[in-house]
Length: 147
Image 1 (cartoon, one colour):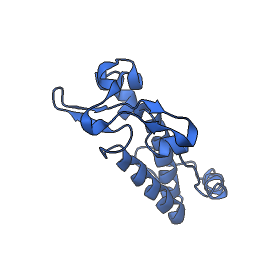
Image 2: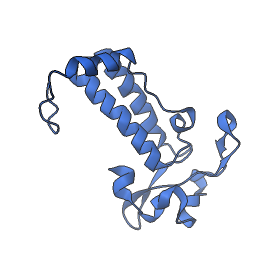
Image 3: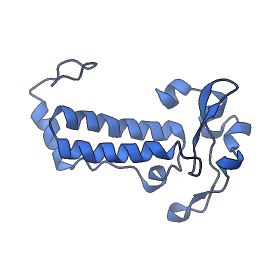
Image 4: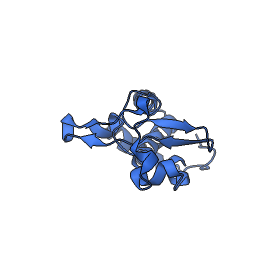
């Protein structure tokens, strides 16, 4: 089945694409830090877009089980960005009318890492540091961050 914005796929490649997807069991997932929202929106967006593309491929090749698995994870990971008690949350900027990231100052390393600032108290390093999260809170490269 064609994906409208891509057109008709090369049907000779579909079996190879399906095989690669099934062989990997659609198991592409985010690293633990990214899966917990401890990542900047630019790099998170790239990873989530990859997962979304795999979901489109699973859908267009009829791999419903893989599609459901990918969609479940995508929904979970996207929700992290909107929950104010999570790590690097996205916020609405009423002054300029845009979506910006709070930023997260990480303490610890690996599995013990955590976000040391509190977005619910507006302790957002991205608001005061123009380079934080690639300047996201200063509207730098929003076309990269959010597509």
